[in-house]
Amino acid sequence: MASLTLSEITYYRSRLADYPDAILVLDEIIACDGDLEDAAINLAIAAGQLPDCTDWLDGLAKRYRVELCQEMIQQELSQGNVIPVINHLIQSKIGPDILVIPVVFYVMKIGINNFCAPLS
Image 1 (cartoon, rainbow, N blue to C red):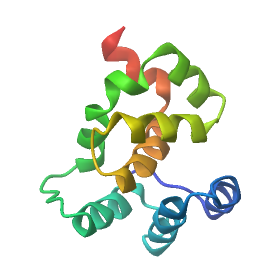
Image 2 (tube, rainbow, N blue to C red; image 1 turned 135 degrees about the vertical axis):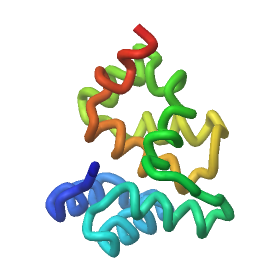
Image 3 (cartoon, rainbow, N blue to C red; image 1 turned 90 degrees about the horizontal axis):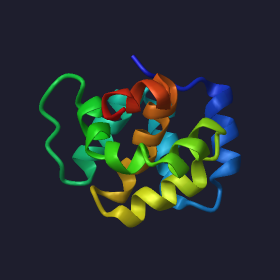
Image 4 (tube, rainbow, N blue to C red; image 1 turned 90 degrees about the vertical axis):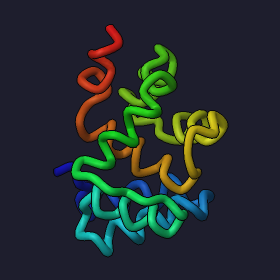
């Protein structure tokens, strides 16, 4: 289970204060006791998606794999620079904007190198 601690949520809340969707996502993560999967499912339902399997967040993240595994994006993410990564994924229009943030947190938690290994 990938999750964020309260201190991580507080840190990202300050870093992403200019992103209203990010605040909504972080509030949902708090409501789900830090569990990224539960929060992403709730956000997906609110966005009109029908998450219907276990490991749904992992499957969602895989839709973004090609974008996330670009060298520049991997470097940003490995350095903890989430804002350019979030902006890039929102511009890619792969899925609802509100789901980009949980995907980015999930990939950071499992490790960008592990996530991108199948493309290597």
